[in-house]
Length: 600
Image (cartoon, rainbow, N blue to C red):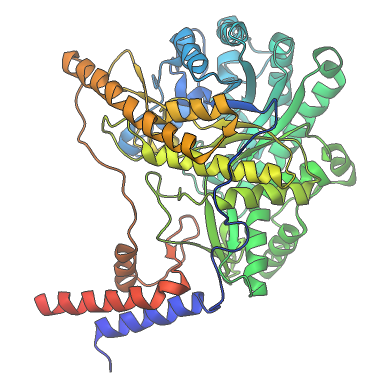
């Protein structure tokens, strides 16, 4: 019998070699090409984004009602360090300050969301309309337009009025369709003369799965196997109704457009010669982006979702599928309700086939898919544990949308990277690299014929990051949350992004490299300003400096040796190691383990 350590190493060796069985699997193939120097089409729109709960603060001011996130974040243990969005960036009081930042960047558009409970405190229009909330958004919209910045408005960025959750069960209830339509209609009535781009929902996948399946997000319900599908079903119907309301009542006089913002990671087969892996990767994307896009463009759920959820439901002894069905009339009503498609994209996963149990106790959205998500330890991950930088996946996803949905008009509504730190470092070179590579892959997609009309960097400011509180920072501008005034400071990425916008792309290698160098040089003065402000502030408490991690291959291999590949569908823990370096890494790991055993 092998000693325990050697047995573990052999087990890892077999697992990794199985995952990397195709010796000709070349990771540089299939559009992983070199950097492309060129510019975007004339009229391409550059922007940045935010959302109401994450940035506005003023959670209980001027007649605003409670949202599900106000209530959820006040429950102990729901948010990291029990932080809340009560004050956040104080955006409610800083319209002019923030618009000046947008103007400084020379953005063409700014994407923000309207807080439903700020306009209708209970969520029910007949109860009460809060005119002070209307005034706030009037001022924001007018100030943007005065500065020649196009507003792109999201109607629902997760902050459902709490009364609707308590009274009806939120998105589990079909009554939300009419309530949301009344809210949207109010927005069209009051703001539609100045707004030409409306987004109904932001990332409904997260609303459904994290709000009603895993309970990680508000309202925090764990209705496994049913809750996410029911919520999504009602959200899709609500989107369609709002689109039809605008189409019949407002489009003729306001001349605007209504779309939806869908998030999707790209799924790449682990083994491109293995048909099961190819099918699993497509299934991953269909269960993510296709869940919402396919009904909106084609009238019904993806066939693979209907097949897999239906089969699992039958195996669990259920009389009908856990995935709801649309009637023929609903299919016709929903199909084509999209003037433009918003795409939120951040990262990529490798996907392989994995058969999950079909018993009723283990039923969930995640087990329905019969797949495992994996990552390459060489991918940079400077911040959020789920966000690896994999630029080539962006081009793949955009081309998938073109092929699947008839090349719709696309606006990239979210793309960016976080850092998981609380320090004062503003020289965010990793963000510059991320933006440079992801924007370039978008440019390649446009050269492929994908109809991308605009790009929205996520996000303008550091802000409240949902269940992660303030521990993750996506902003181009650093916000000093420890200071009552919440001052903003530009990071190096501001200067880099500004130059991309001014040049409408990447003119040549020498110039782009010069942008990076100059951007990093400018952040030192911002660092000095921030340090001086903190020294002079009696309100500020310095946080320990923690630098973003770069996940090392050796560390992951050692982790594998102690904890062989396991599948946790809510969070990726598996690792794919490239075939070309598998043996050398494993031999190094074995040697390292040998040294450790001798030391002990």
